[in-house]
Length: 168
Image (cartoon, rainbow, N blue to C red; front, side):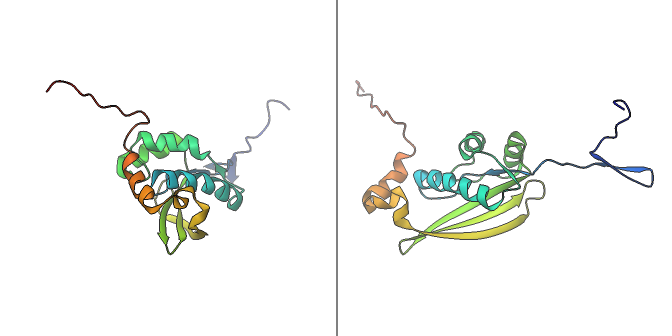
């Protein structure tokens, strides 16, 4: 009957309810990859979204652009990792059960991306893997070395930069 249904989320053994079983897929968010360049971090983060979604089809992977904004709000960016309370606030705000941390290294025209999937509650690594791709696949490495090095410093400035030349 309509009033006599049993809650499918409650598991009972020998007349004792053990609790509620969470039937939803784990929510996974991607933290901004750690890199010397903002543009490389963003590009790898967008690639990681597709890779993680393919690699973990049974998980609810949040869109990288949306979660990146929340990470940035709590000072977790391409060149700085949040820890402790700030990381807890990020994981709470994103409702994450797991999160992905990434380090990017470039050597001999190869970009090595070290990926670690971590549990949001214990912070332990659940799984890790490495992805290697040719550096020329990324826009930052198609620029000259001088331009690439200078771009590190322009990440701090807004798009429109002005100087106030006045009487001093």
